[in-house]
Image: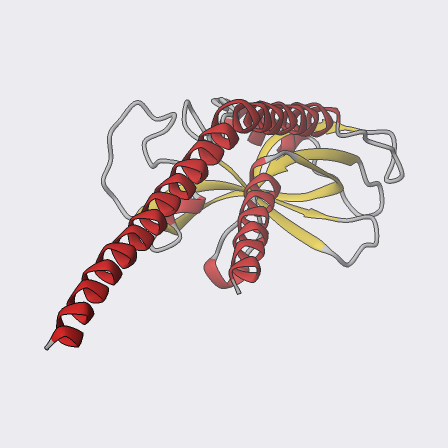
Length: 226
């Protein structure tokens, strides 16, 4: 039972870390920009998926609605569409340090084309599209590419995941060494202490049984004389 609980907790932790990395790490889509616009958006229970409201404005606000930039795009199949929000991240999480949402919006508008003469672009973004919660991925950068079949290698993700894997391996190795040098000897010492204590208790029991046995035998001799 305890083994199943431990594996369940490990799998849960792995799923949480995987979702966190999938949301935070950058992704790139090759699409055609078909529209750019601003829209007043209500921010409520989905606030955690949006930037802090005064990021990039220099003014502290307390409103629940915000004017947010959006970019509409279509994939090469001509039917799949996607909408990106375009917000500054500032100094907060995730650490993209984005301050140029207005410039990015101008670049996206300049790259907007018609279906007859498409200009394919690579939009780098993070986050998810969750329609039920009105959540959109946040565009980080945009650049023109040669065509819809261009190959994009996610070097940043490869480097970050490699560093994370290296850190996990080093932490595991350090823990195994710490366990071998400190924890295991301490457990052995504790076990030996308990064993010695058990042996002393058993010896005391035997001695007590011998003592009371001698007393019983002595009393038996008195009963025999009577």
